[in-house]
Length: 133
Image (cartoon, helix red, strand yellow):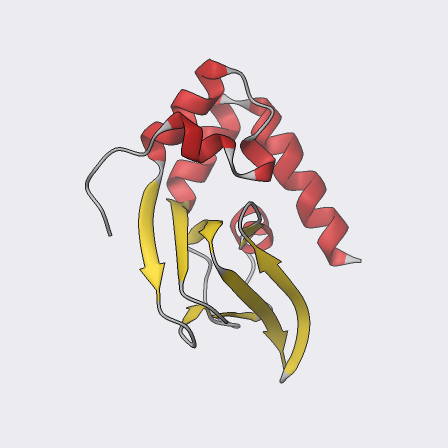
């Protein structure tokens, strides 16, 4: 984890935040924190209660369920939105297949963002719905 502030330019590199105006980007940046994971490390575990929304800044991850790879995600993508939005148990594992750097938002910060920047709520809801099918 890092205590240094996250720049607006880093937030702009994440798809769900990229179209926000300066005020929205600044709100997101103020709530973001950073983590890194080594290749092979699990970022999210199925059947855990969701605590964080992760925005991939560098590297690639696989979304896996019952040994099957459901998706490969890379920089610019978010993961964990379904659990945070729906407050449902995680339904898949997310594993780093390269070294990964993420910006993460605790579920309480996600709630703050959704209330303060309604555009984020709309984009996260749409993303969650598209991944449920």
